[in-house]
Image (cartoon, one colour):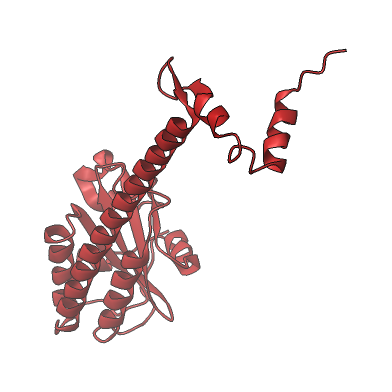
Amino acid sequence: MSNALNSDQIAEFFRANPDFFESNVDVLLNINVTHPHGGRTVSIPERQLIATREKVKLLESKLSELVKFGQENDALSEKTQRLTLALIACASAKQLIDTLYLDLLDNFQVPHVAVRFWDVALPEVLQPEFQPVATELIQFVDAMTSPYCGSHPVYETNLWFGEHAPHLKSYALVPLKKGASFGLLLMASENAERFYADMGTIFLTRIGDVFAHCLARHLSMVRAPTSE
């Protein structure tokens, strides 16, 4: 019967005898293993050094990614802060809407933005933002607890962008609520990766909350007509 040890038994021996190589340094230095990126062999200490270098590179890459995300979040936070202050300074609903449109285009590079209201008193001149919307859309927004981002428009919302509608590939829907919902902020892009399903929505939420709060000072909440 063969007395040869299998790989599991050898591994178990070294785990049970961690000081083996301390008393047998020559064995450690003379064992060669395959290089991870080539056919040649290297010593175990050199192999460990290679593994350590690869771990360091991986950690550096992750750290660089975290720094990049942090810088992007800082930039978004600053833009959101400036928009918040601009909205607070507005003296009318029209000024609020115009300020939002311009800021999202110029500072956030969102190419297509639309707003719709319901349950509010209609102005004398019916602006696009006060056009009737489907009851199903209102119910959808009522049920939202956070912004929606994705590649599919909800109900007829993509048609709010007219001739641009066929070219839009990603959407962000932000509910406007003051207790109950009274409107929707919709953003869209031809870039399919601009608003994606798993993206963070904290800044969208903040913008929607501030916009809704400021609007509530200038709009009378009543039942507006809806399309069927």
